Length: 226
Length: 87
Image 1 (cartoon, rainbow over the protein chains, first blue to last red):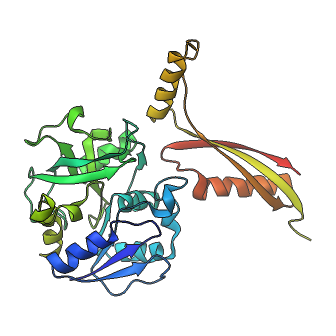
Image 2 (cartoon, rainbow over the protein chains, first blue to last red):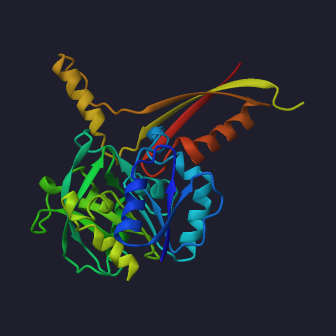
Image 3 (cartoon, chains in turn cyan, blue):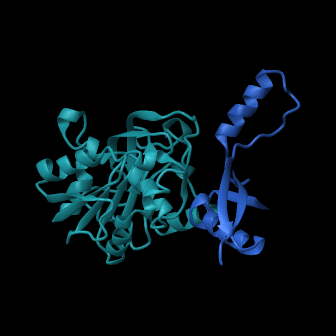
């Protein structure tokens, strides 16, 4: 397994992703600056969290036009995995690799805390080491994670088993009190049609070692490795 | 000679009516708390002033529409309108 972490101006979770892949998962990983027009030959591309281009205009709206994004789209079109975390998810939405858009959190506040995620499908390269219904404790840190899509898109996401994670209680119950940002249908992560592109607001890379309070997020990386 | 005239485009972008606007709700509640109870609905949007060059109004309008659709607007959640002035 070889991986690339794309670095945009304003990325701030790039080192966390790099560290987890290299030191925890023993993956051959390298950074790719957003100006690069080509990706090195890798299996996995990570779009990390942060505030690319200062979140100007809309989150991810400017980063999606980075030269490296054309290469990311090509990579995705070959069927190899791409994971976008937090701002990376926002970039994937703006780039049209995933459907829908992000809105300001319903509370209007930046929310930074651990949440519980319910795994909704194991039929993905990102969750195949998890069971459907498995609960993960993973942190979020965002001001715009309120996922929105039209009812038609939501229907498709549901019927095609493309909702990967939902915000839930520790026991897996759903409800507005467990939804930290107002996301439609409590969505925390979704897949593209080909099931090789995942966007998720929570940060598995910040929950991949016990010393950081949780290692539940490691299952995402381990799924990709297996 | 091409592109010798100067134009200004005023672009308004707002959230679609099907999209909730918690920011607008909060601002509306703030107006109410100041006693402006006649305010019944409020939605927060964005406004862009773009200075650009072009030949005539029609071609400038076509370009501004492209600005909007390519970058300024996210059609999943937003709608837009604009007007173009010469000079």
